Image (tube, rainbow, N blue to C red; front, side, top):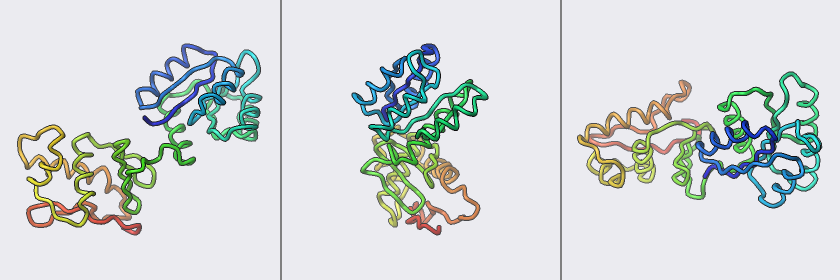
Length: 231
């Protein structure tokens, strides 16, 4: 699970849509439609982040933000009416972490939410995460990041990368790799591993300033090089 998110918005259609979208991204989401209910939920649930609308029926989100900050440092992403620059400035002054004007693209909201959580160090990595300089591999959340930016891999490619990383510095043949990821989907030909490794490289070796390979070929196998800060 990526985190526990509280949505405070009286637009039930919008909040339901956001709950579905964020749920699909791995978040647990709860919804309330008034500031008072939002304050109570923050106290009761201690969510990882709050998505807080400015326009609410009892008292506005700016006042709700101020009251939340009196007892909690929970990250707050405020939703403001388009063009209401004053609301955005006041919200930031009151302690909001970021704002997003309506209407917005859900993908942008998700990106901003992840950025807030990453800056706060919430849900950034599980206790079993492996770090090699700029590269972070987290088996708990099955995610790969470079400098905090998530890189996309298929499930099978992620399993291959984990197997290589857990054997850093050791040359692994294709047969050994297939045995290590035997819990994953079986491959018809061991040469398909070559294709998967090339795609892993494309995902995590994209910085032209750092052309050094993370996964290299040695003889008839592959070896995970310990990825240094200056690599």
